[in-house]
Length: 212
Length: 270
Image 1: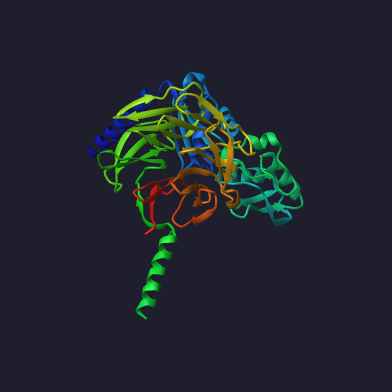
Image 2: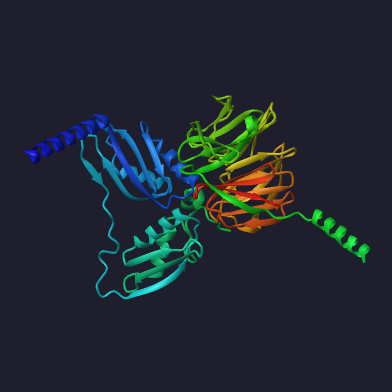
């Protein structure tokens, strides 16, 4: 009998909670974006400003320490994961995970990229250190994402102080130059590959490393 | 012998008077959840420190011992503050405006220009200067007319995201954040000099100019740099700083805000 009462009470509480959530968010979708490397308030608040271009955005919040950016948006506009991540990238930032809790209760989440999933088993692994220009934690996120986005790269870790990228890659399928090109395309100069001026200029303020 | 001792004593007193001592850390004060970006001080009613709490979209104040925190209202990403003749000016980075706080009342400062993320403001008598971050320029008014100083670039007189500004008797000092330097202009907007290029700063986010020194917070390098008014480096402080954002001297003590560590470093030169 006592067990039945407990089950009924829990059911009622869950029902109330869901009902409250539905009422609260029936017109608005809730977005959570994890942005890599947020560290400078000027840039973090700049990301927030960039999202003001989405007319109707509300309840924006940025947690600097975790890099989590949240906001709500009118459900009828059906803002997509791709649109959100595109806006993050357009602002010069690197999205890690994006999640949407739709007003109707459904949840969408970005798929995590698997690094070098098609790397052959008999790969010729090599390690290398390459110079990559950059300034801050946001640079680190962008550089590492660009490097690990190259098929054949197993790991990449950039040191903010030394500006060196420690790389583990399959020398049988890719070259260091392939990795450097990808990094330059993201806006960061290496010894042998330079980012184009437009891409460099679009980096957030704190990422504008000295090119002289 | 007595005469020699007197001469030695007199000489050492003269020597010590002529030599300026270095700034030394006295203590660090934790601020709880406050993420300080700008600091100012109001002398009325015993004196209070005011902090722009950027992450929490608010202004907070403390007594002179940094106790008795009061929340002084909501502001959209407040930045480097200014105090002038009973009025606090708050640049709202998130809403592109300057807000005045006086006797508990908030009003928007009327401007004849559009701002894009003001990072700092300074008022001195009738003069007003604003660091207009995304527009890469400084707006300055002598109380009658406005001038625009600078444009995006790296040359002398150009800016790359200015974050703070201070007006002195004859000059305007600018924290040219992402050109990693301080630039100095006269009040007609003519470039006069550049400071700090040798120190390889990584974002000069905040400045404070005293009667004889220039203080610069070097954000990413977590350092405080101190120069004389000619731009000569006097001291580098790098222990106990964690993404510093602003500095201020009150009653002979230097106060430096640490954004990431959420604290204030207090220094003296005793």
